[in-house]
Image: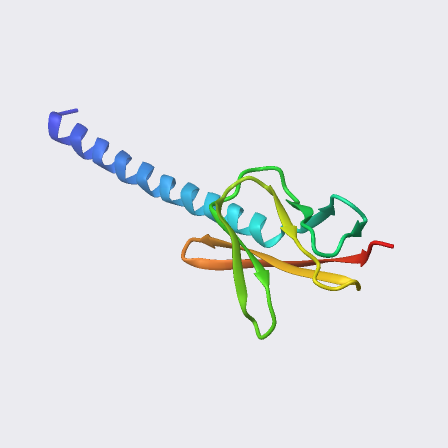
Length: 133
């Protein structure tokens, strides 16, 4: 085998490996996207009853235990408005605090938004509290 044919063979092998690498990369991206779409948010209240006018803590867990791409947490308000609460998170759990404004059942709506491969994937959730008696 001469030098030129060895070089052609190596170039062919490099092209083949680059093609395989692209397929693997695409496959890994698809796996991550599927994991994001199949995530559930679980809200764990610090207390079962809330006290009006003081911070009350929620621990929010994204139901998978692997790191995520950077994500943001929003409080959902009326008329599709969002208030950003946290950003640049990657761990699958985080804490939120809220202050009830009335002595009645409180519903907290929130969502996680993950930017992944140019898409914004939103995972909404809500938790409700009864007032302290």
